[in-house]
Length: 305
Length: 305
Image 1 (cartoon, rainbow over the protein chains, first blue to last red):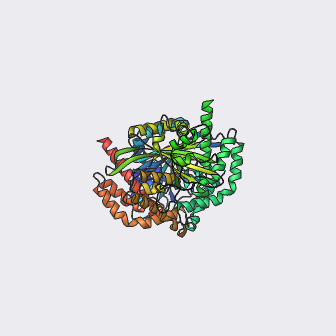
Image 2: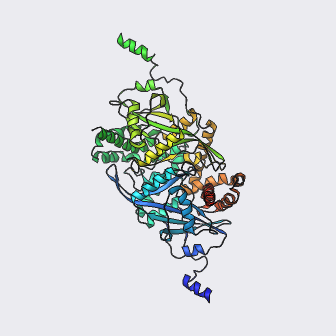
């Protein structure tokens, strides 16, 4: 009877293998993971390993170049293996709850941030002889709290070992359609990290779903060219250029709109269009950098006034 | 006569267009840039723009997982546009020397690091209607000095704006042949940054040339598969798995050699082989991460003793 009472308190059991209608990512080009409820995940047998990772983010009122809303600061890390991922790791449920295990790992690198069940976002599973269920958490912080975590990270024992550095994820897309989130998504991610990033950005309404799809599509356009040009990254970039060259005037106009950017920004933009020695493609990526350089020059100029 | 005297003091003029025998990169798959001497670069006309970027690095006696020599800490940054690059920018030679201009830009984000002509490494040019010559500097610091710069960066006004975070470059290659430098090189770089990184690592004898070639080759292998599987990154990773699956036992052996890693490392490695929901490929990348997770667990265990 006690057992029955307990079961009743835990709610009805779903039929094995049947997933409730949980949200999917639905972004073309990104393989779906099988979602399951926390309740289902907790009922998986000892043959399953549980990983817990967390996305820490904060509303960010800042404007890049005084013009592009940053919207949110989202933390990821460059790992020892050269891949981008979220803080977290595997949790041995023989000893710890998911949250205790996650907080232990986070505590090593990020100082005193403690997540709870209220921060739980989703679980996704994979099947095979060795089974893993990936739990994902998201915690909204203030920008000051998030910055404090970045400072803790650079002082932590993990820094320069398992973690090569924390980075913020650019959520915006610049007018060249590659600068920002698309370029970022073209980097290399570990395991489920890229899926979890896109999933969280969608579920938490941090980036419109169509923007996510556009960003992912932009990173896949170059794949074909990588073969055409044989040169791997070079071909990849050249193809980008093909897609983006048409936007040069547009981008130039964008800079011209930007007070204080007209001289340096526009001039260096033109330079960037042909410069930097790896052909038009890299030049076109570089011209995005020229914006930053231009801003740097501006900042110096302001500093001198 | 004064002019002649000056010219004599500056040394003989090389024939126009003739480049002295300067070192090249010579890494297959990475397009060569045209090298030129600083002397030649300084004689380029006002139609040329000059960019200056710097690689800050420090000898690092640390061992990853107590087993993999880190050798050097090398600083790069994740930029606002989602690309990896070196600190620096364009220098307006109408007002500044190359070093003054570079130091002004560096000062914005990295605190008090000042480079001199002694840190000059190389110049590479590109031709076209708009001309850019890219100057590159390298300064060896102590690990403490480099860490101080990382701390300055996270406190700087640029942090979270033009610079989304500083990262260290993994110079090692793990036994799966992707973890470390190869994965890192598969990320997205701005303009000449990837060339300059490889060039500096070769010229400064920080990574053996054959290791650089192997790392670049490893990042290009997947390109074909990106088409075969149509899924962009998914195909990319799946192909990696095809290349790397054979090494699983090897990697497992590697973990087993590692004191304290046998239980957690080996067990989680096996889980990783099939886990993480994006198929064998990502699982194989994840298994690299499992090393870190395993270490985290270890660290926690130590912390508890």
